Image (tube, rainbow, N blue to C red; front, side, top):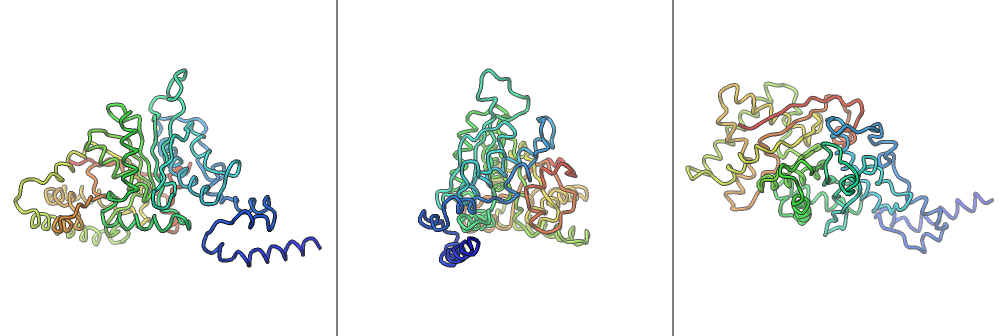
Length: 390
């Protein structure tokens, strides 16, 4: 009898609140009382396995070696995941013991220093973490551990943030991310932390995934122009060009890239003419001293072209077309036409130098190939390449 009464009450409650569930709206206190507040809160705070560190995180890292590249990569990715989970906790009202975010940074001796909150949708898009040892004078700091890590999440498929994230993604495609209020807030926070950096910037990390890696990349570029080189971890960074890398025939891929390089170089000469060397070209050369860490999956259409981008530069040098490629690699077609229209456009994906890590383990489906959890996999199989601009 009790079960029938309970089921009838549940059905009546859900039918009345159907629109709220569809629209992702929060329930009022009176709504909670309908089934009893403890029961309803229990429903509301259930978290997926991906949010729980002990089930999905790099919990295998129990003794940290800060000189180990796998440990550093895994920790940077975990801190970015912490931002995702922070925002999930906020949207799903997971508080106290139900909140899932804390272990994603506390497991590696970090504390949350500051939250970065978007001024449009009030979502958490970034976090500043501080290594605890550096806050206590009676502790010695582990060598190579960062003082601060500034991490940015990517697009979150959740009702309260998806609209804003997609709009910023569109700005990213148009090379206009730098005009957004989210990036400007992020840049201010990065500059404030950078003011405390050592001369070589080695005590600060930037990290981001997907859209968040675009924010971190642009912030890292700006800091480099100011003379501050910071260690930067970019997971699945968007490459704003056709994903030629997903094509199978190598001859076809090389042909498309060669044609694109020639067209880019020709447009650059035609648009810029024989004017004095543009300031942007000098800045591109100056960026070559900064070598961020890029992490790409060849089956992820969003970032896979970075693999071909750097490979093609090497091929062009080998066939004696290095001058064409050096001119092409400093310009994108979108930015060239923006120059004609006199619009300020920042070529986000163009990088002189990078440590490129390619995940060589096959991952079926876009969601897994673009997911951040692959980067702390204890069985990670990756190929690391250093590419430097000359």
